[in-house]
Length: 154
Image (cartoon, rainbow, N blue to C red; front, side, top):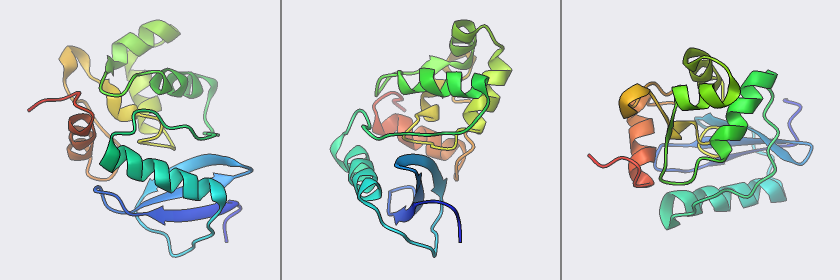
């Protein structure tokens, strides 16, 4: 048994997503289902917001978040939270804001424990190329999310 307060698997167009809560905040979103389910009011709210994002055009999540990472990673995640729905930044643009390197920003994106809610899919490589995506489905998932938001027209 984990030390999470709650765990809930949510259906999505990307397949099941498992949302984790600890101490009143979302700590992780994992691609895939969990056999363990401990539903809490916050996780029910997260489910409703994820449904609204995928099916009703919710543009900004309003959930308490507690991702754990290095100071640099947390700085990258904070910037990602400020990227508006349907917009993108590049790894280099974020690196410039933080005084770091684009490759390090890519690493922080790849270690984002709360994908979709912390929108690492809104970060592109130089020249507005897709770049990588660490979630299930890789760049196909990233492309889907960008198309959903109207940030990528193919």
